[in-house]
Length: 226
Image (cartoon, rainbow, N blue to C red; front, side, top):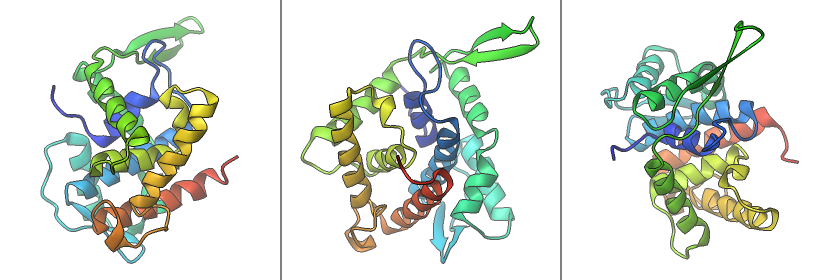
């Protein structure tokens, strides 16, 4: 099983296995997708923060077309804030990542038509469950275990909390509330919640800075949590 990227992991969770439809807010998901690409690039040592701006610290391609296109775009542009990059990247990104998942056989593209064939509606039910099983197992251990999650799982948990995607975990209301609290704890431990210093963060300070900036940008864009 070839590994998938952080934005792909987020989409695998966001789309219902059977119906192939996205769970939760589309705007939140699109912002989360943009954030996940930027966090992935931080995880592989390509991006960091300089003041309020996201900057490239290594422009070597990583070998993924979507990640490399974003890396080249940031490298060739003038510096922008995290909020600015979320808005610049979110439009059309989900479709590109979904197309990649379809090509790799992770999900299927079910094309349904409406209005006499004028409007095409796409669903993306799961084709290969192995990736989702791995993702959910990592998250379950992070939510119930006593040990700190690894860096990638902490980043995914932080994105789930920031984009308010807890319903994608498929839990009942009581368990969902507990999961939200635990996700917030993991996010805080990753330096997202501001409760720890970057030196105490469970992930590298350079990645923590990116996650913290993106988390604030997502919260600003979505408004106060109900």
